Image (cartoon, rainbow, N blue to C red):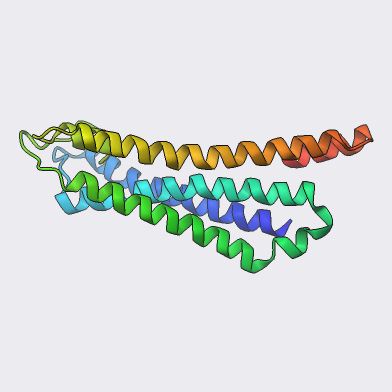
Length: 187
């Protein structure tokens, strides 16, 4: 049970951090006449929103792997999911999230901005920023869509494969009570 609680603590921290990045500025915008954000403030907010979101996607894949090991290899679970592996999975999720965030933030903020320079959105996000650019953004949009699909699709596929293996293992359990208990653990 300890590895899953470890992952849940990290997931909770990521969720709280995401809300802490967006909500304070959003509340200030609701309560004041001045709804501006500095260039650096927007870049910082965008970096952290992407970093936390991408990290969470990969952390969910790590959590699915944890459940896979717990159900499909229960006798070796303590050996496979030791403290070093848990920490490595979290750090790998963070590193991947950091790389994705740095690349996507750098892509967006290398664009030349012109016009009213007002983001019509409640936080700095990529699509509204791209609309402020005064150059052809089609190649940037393709790069960002590709990166976003990889960030979402790769962990999603890992989660699907993990849970397909889990369901296959559960269906091989002979007792109905054992299947029910295992399904309830996974859900």
